[in-house]
Image (cartoon, rainbow, N blue to C red):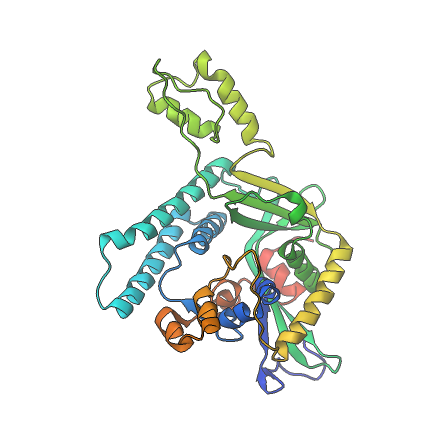
Length: 386
């Protein structure tokens, strides 16, 4: 809330723009301050030129498709619109760098990646059906939040921002839950999720806005993996070997083979696949109901407050080169070039541009319909009946 006697939020603190720091940006700051300095919208705000057709775009397509269906839109029309935008950006960046258009061969990685993403989305929607968060009630998808942080003297010095994938309600308790969707290549372990930074962070933000406890988080994991097709035996029937596939995929394979899914031969394998599809052993989809300890929320907020204060006061930039490598850094060429004494300015101009993504982009593009900064905003956005 705005302190008494203050007519509007100030735009500066200590002579500099007030930082807006997302929940994910806090992780990047703790991981490596140099990496954070390159990419943060509060610092250099660098993004690679062209489309990011790797893991980032794959996850974005799945998220956009799930959100579109929840809003009553065509998920694949929304996905195609995003893909077209990414393709246009990639083409423009290539033209600026090379001076000519891309060849069909150079399009292949992008096209393959995007088609895979749409397949992951299609399989997910087929698996969970129209109401993908059931049995929880979806109150609102993609809620972007802003929370002000003040000094002891009442001066605004930072905004904590974040976007949860869904605000849910437990139908049995009517308490609030947060939905969090993640695509993955390595199956997450429940013990690692229980006290994860983002898992605790979004419920903490909602509690700060509403003053009411958030009961938990529904973790929604989607494996970036396609069902394996059963082999065809010499008999002409399909193998009943236990493979990573689904009941629906196996039924499609049976029909494509000219067989009847109701035949006795396929009954056992289809029953086993159906049971696995509905269990926690499903190789493609992971759902965990994670309750949030209030002690973890309190400590999370205290920790974040200290980090925001550091960021708001122009921290010293250091780098971190772990022995596990920097596979998770989007700016490795810049950092390595700096360490080797190369022309960092040239690397930056050749490969990067100023831009942003995620919550920071939502804050810049959105006109307030899905942003919440108070309990009143939240109730208006999701129309919770009390």
